[in-house]
Image 1 (cartoon, each protein chain N blue to C red):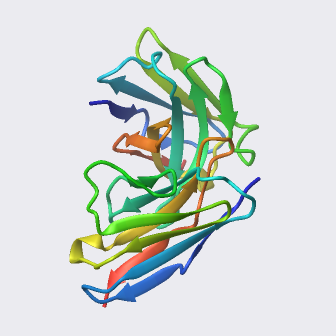
Image 2 (image 1 turned 90 degrees about the vertical axis):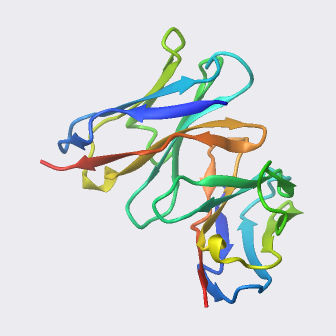
Length: 118
Length: 107
């Protein structure tokens, strides 16, 4: 059973870079045909897709965030990461990592709250 | 980019009622449509993928239909544990987009 777990600072200052890591267990991040994705959800609001990385390393990003987002993978650690630069209070949200396959987003992490505040 | 529009944004129904939520894509997406259930304070859970395929372990009272631009999620007999927000999602080709969500309550 695949499991995902987000980790990273829960508090980030405005204008700084938010950095999160998702650790995958129960399977190799480099095997199979999967996208490894990041999604966020501000309190009381809907889900917003941030971007994803394929097992080959190719990436896709939400056009509204593309200029500030970088998603990378570290196959040796079975992890993938999110960096979001120049954050503001509007980036405060629960951040989820997830695996996307032919059935959509089948596996999700538990989510981690990131607050942007000085 | 393809936009996903759900309706209604909220609804209230009685236990045992048949409930239908619709999702419309601004362009055709074939059947690359998934439905998720998110209970308060919980992680979204995949209910249906490929527009009509029930994810393993999901109760059979949930069903999905549609193709192209118009999709529906139906709960045949509403149960108290179905109180949640439901999201449709276009997947496969990027950018991935979610509907704005439908909040379902018990009357």
